[in-house]
Length: 371
Ligand code: ABU
Image (tube, rainbow, N blue to C red; front, side, top):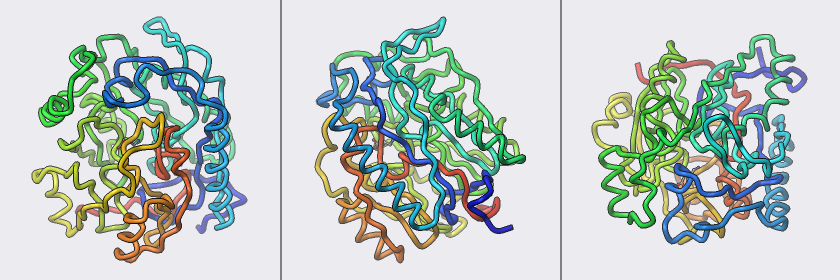
C-alpha cells in the first residue's frame, strides 16, 4: 500500500529508497560535555575543543537551529513528513551508579542514537557517558509512533555500564600523535574495550538484508555481535577503515547512493578483503570528491569529510551541503539530482545532513542485494 501522510508507519530497509518521513535534529540547549575517555579520543590533539566545555554560545545554537529549521521546511515542501525531537535539559549531569559526568550532549544528531531497520527503531547503547540519556529526546516521538502504528517495534539495546573498564587507558595520554593512532587503527585497537556490547547507530549502514557495521571507537565487536543476535534475519558484516585515526560513525566514510553505487572516503579506503561482497555483486565503490574546506568549523567534533555525509531522498536525488562544491559536482556526474542545503554552521552540533536526520519511513521492502 502506498505511503500516506495521514497515517504513521515506520519502515525503512536501506539508505536510498524514497524517503517519506524523517526526524531532523535540533540544536536546542546543546552542550560541549566535559572530558571523558571515549569523547576525548575523538578530539584531535590540536583541536580548539580541547579543554573547553559548557553550554554552546546562544548565537551558535540560534544559527544552527535556523539552518536545521530551513532544512526541515525544505523537506516538508517536497512532501515529506518531518518530526523534531523534544529537547531535555542537557545541562543536567548524567549520573548512574557507575559513572558521573557534569553535562550531556544535545538532541543532535538523531542518526547516532536511532537505528531504523524495517519496522523497528532501535535505541543504540551509545558509548559516551554524556550521551547515555540522549534517547529521552526522542521518547515522545517513539511513544507517538507506538500509539499510531500497530506494527511499530520500539526497541532499546541494553544500557551499558560505561565504567572505566570500557575504555583503554592508552588512549587517555595527553599526546598520542596521528602516526600512533593510525597504527592502532590498523591493528583494530580502539578506545573502547570488549567489556560489554557498545554501538552507536551511526556506525550501521542498511543494505536490505545486509547490515554493514564499522568497528571503531564507538562500536566494539561485542556491539556488532549483539546486533547480529538481535537481527537474526540479517547478515551483519564488520568493516573497518584503517586510514581513519579517529574512527567514529561510518557516514563520513562509506556512503551508499543507490543499489550498485557507494562513495568511499579516499583517505579511509575499505580494505581489499572486505570489498569482496560488493565486487562479486557488481557494486561500484568510487572515491568521494575532496572536501571544499581545509578545516572543520570552530568547536566541531567532526572532520572535513562531512562533505560526503549526504542525505539520499531517492535513488536519483541527494541533499549535499551547499558549500561542498566538489561533492556536488561529483554527484552530478554520477547522475544524481543535487539539492544544495546550507548546513555548515550546524556541523559543530554533531554532523552533516545524514547525521542530523533519522529515517522513519522509506518506500520499498527488504531486498537481498548480495545474493
Ligand atoms: N559523525 C560523523 C563524523 C565522522 C568524521 O568526523 O569524519
